[in-house]
Image (cartoon, rainbow over all chains, first blue to last red; front, side):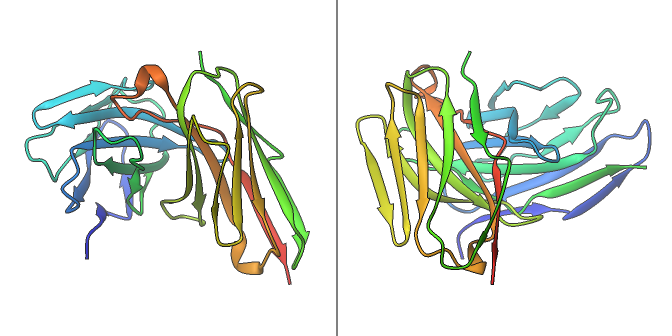
Length: 114
Length: 115
């Protein structure tokens, strides 16, 4: 089955810890995205990548880092510099360069700071 | 700056009712607009995508319209069912972001359809 997987489903972080959220896709999509969702709010873009070894900051990149070493993988690290990391994190991908492309989303990771 | 607003934030209707969800955006220079569904604790599923040159798109009981000049889109759900209960989000892709795919989301409308 083609799709996007995220792991873990739930993640707990202690103060001062870095944690990494996994995102993998087997759709052969070029572009991948990380969003953050807070209760009652829409999604806000953290980082995105259009090709391997290249990525750009979104609207709320501070305290986060990413890498894109493989086309199918786009992990997100939440660093200790992110002061309020408790949120629902969603990864998405799309086939770049088409006018009707839609973003396909993973099931999400819920991160809680203890 | 593009802002996307969805009103109301929550809506409760009896089963079988036809309903309309609203989405407004401040900048009409959009590439396309999408409607997504999100079930509690889950990811998003794309429902309908409307290109800027189109006026509406239909899929089953769903119909989405787009009026760029007034900065509005509506999602019409016919004969609502309890299974339609979810949060519905709209998102716009700006012309200036046409080659990056970046989307700007509204905050969503949470729909509850009562049996």
